[in-house]
Image (cartoon, rainbow, N blue to C red; front, side, top):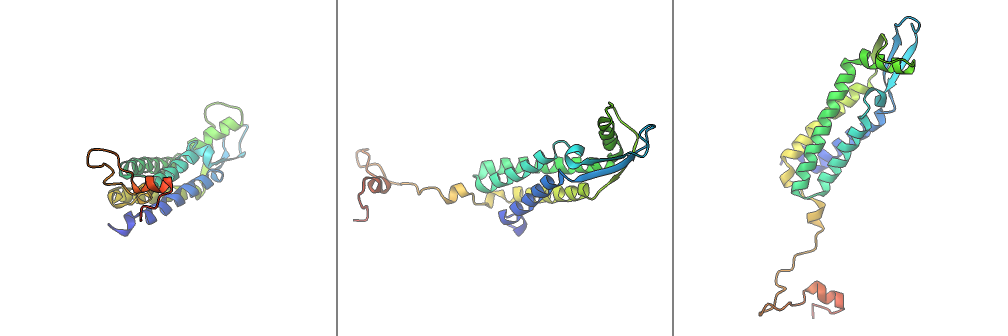
Length: 192
């Protein structure tokens, strides 16, 4: 297994992406001025959550799915990594749409702020936050995909901390013989 697909690389990369995404939700993503008659020159801005309504949710899904993958068994690990990959891809898509459709998004935001419906003519500029979110979304997607490829070799917490299996707890005639754990519960010392 390559070092990239290991949990100690995948988990921090995706948690970084999730944290940056959540933080960026309250930061200004788009700025501009209205060109609409009556509103000409009015400054308009939109935060990350105004630009992309599900932004924080996508970040939280990426983080939660990755933590679940690191602590689960093999089947659940793969399932949660697929969920994290889907959320990372969706995050990259909406961040790219925020960059390419800034005028339309900010126009709707300006219309809502002025009490109108539809869209107001706006000239928008994009801050660096959507670009950062796009970069960390692609980083998370790459980390999750490599983690998914190497998921079979991950050790989950459930395997690491399970109680050891008792092999011979049945007697010669099928009677139940007390296992060492049962004897310890009764106060007996199974080593004697």
